[in-house]
Image (tube, rainbow, N blue to C red; front, side, top):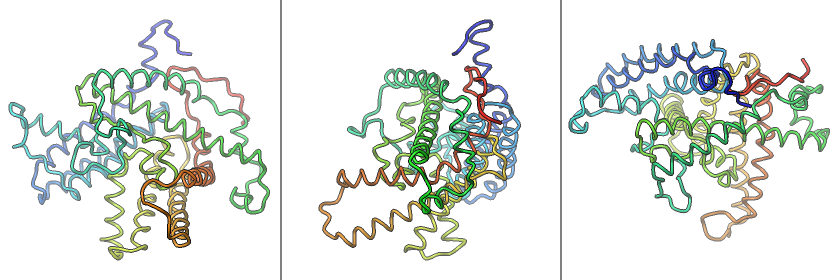
Length: 412
């Protein structure tokens, strides 16, 4: 458990190794300044394009420096992705595609132009879902599904998220240790034949099915809980210290009850931090570069595959930050297979609608369809997730900061 002996709190805080990311912090300040200056220029100004040069250099410096830091790998992934790989793509979108314009004439009375521009530049860096803007991404969860207009008070917000953050930290601290021997054996099977082939051959036993489902659920659950913990901690700083409005920090994930298809698993259930980037570049490539028809099946699924493909490329970096060698990364496979899952279920739904034209009133599907959808989503997710998740689990993740490493009982 957490020990407060000797230096106590200071030693515990130092175990998080956040002080090691100084290069990333400095580069991010530089990016904020560049964005703040460039976005005050005319949307047609060439200065916006020129400012991408230092922005690219700074974000890539962040991404590269993070890989050299011996810290808790989820921290490396979060900082390297958020302030490095993703930020350079977001900056291109902000300045040259969406062409965000910071109008200094609209700053609050008494606020200096420099401070206003820097504040807006900071928002461009950290407001991934574009909360509160005209371009807010689709699928941002509400604080209450029963009352979409509900926003908690500052006291309620801080109390709830602080309590949840403490509980999640303690739970994850016990879970994020060395993988147990049975998981190592599962991820390093003696039979290298792929699971789908063995499934078709009928050589997959009940025990392997159970292990596969359990592994997939535990991996996704720990990923969701860790991201909620990080989101809670950052939002507590933003609302409790920086005086942000709680409305600017809605939940990171929607209710799991919304994830009754693979499409709905990715939106609205999953976090939408990359959605602004993906929905910017996939249409840009399909419409302007590939010049596909503006409407139709080809264009629709090209955008889906491009979106998942871009996400896969970005997550190759997250694999590297998780100590997975480039030759062993399975990120691209995972995301392209996820896109294929959307295609399969859309085809199945289309066939069902042709076979059963009279399906009653539109709206929420009946309970039996949701149950079938959940079973399908669980089955397909457990089919494609382990090949990627195993590389991450075996990548040598350090224990949760503040918790000691267990004596390894896994085979070499």
